[in-house]
Length: 196
Image (cartoon, rainbow, N blue to C red; front, side, top):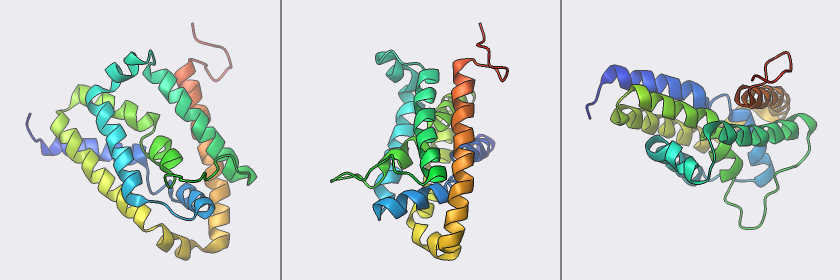
């Protein structure tokens, strides 16, 4: 194992784009408005733990349960679809139950450690040294933690009307991402026919 600055930068940029924590701010604020509190440390650690697990033993782990990456991605797409519907329609599908873990689901999974992040990690591992991916992932998790800690600040800056507009807009974006994730993992082309 050797530390390579270029591999680290490449891994960091790819993971930063896929995790897209800044683009998820309106979604996180929407969840926070329902449950009242987000445990930044716990949520970040769970997301980090999931991604570490998949970085080192991802495919064999899913294989134990007879699940492939595509099926895992489709399951994640359903959760994203439901979250998008909540935001656009103003309905409540994810309820804050007693003893809730502070939105670990759906923030840690599938928003941060989603099918896209996990698939990306598996792809990066085929190209780069694990140590460089690990450093890049760790730095991304620090950024995730800081954004989760600053949700109240973002809330003040945007205000109620700004939050409402962003929630609707990003709800539609989330629906589109869910549909794309579903289509790309089921082999359905844009014409509506299944690929052989």
